[in-house]
Amino acid sequence: RNNELKTHQMQLANAYEDQKDHLEEISALNTELEWAKTQAEAANSAKTSFLFNMSHDIRTPMNAIIGFRDLLEKHIDEPARRADYLSKIKEASKVLLSIINNVLEMARIEKGTVAVEEVPWNTKSFNDTLFYVFHEMMAAKNIEFTREIDVQHINVYCNPTKLREVFLNILSNAYKYT
Image (cartoon, rainbow, N blue to C red):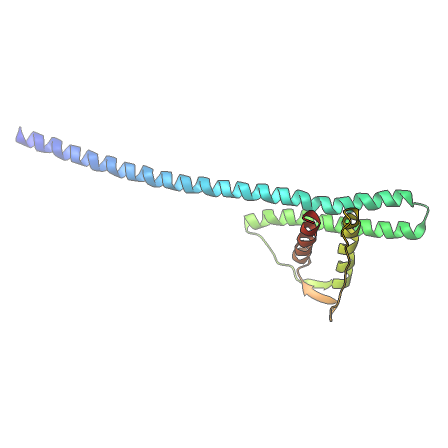
């Protein structure tokens, strides 16, 4: 009877240890699940914020395109103005395409397949484009918007997509918060 009791005690001790091990595993899994949940919530919040900001950034060149298109319609019989407005629409369209490409690049970043581009780039042309895109919008809000360019080398090597994104964000925020 004593051996039987010791056997049962040993079985209970083993069962207790097994249960304890299972509880530790469950606790570790719960900790991992909580961490994964926190990460997923943070990623979801970042994506929501990103989409909110992107929708604002997309509106900026879209407003320029629509505004210059309306001006084009009013001055369709004036070749000089027509050419100017079409040029500005083209530049604003390039800015819009750049923003859309940035959205696509974010997907590439998430996948881990990003390539950095470094090409010659004309700073004066870029300055002109930004001015055309934002000038009318700023004027509509009675914001004085001027530009000045003073560079030694008008052509530089850079990542135009990234540089354009930086300037668009700065100017969009200036417009939004002024």
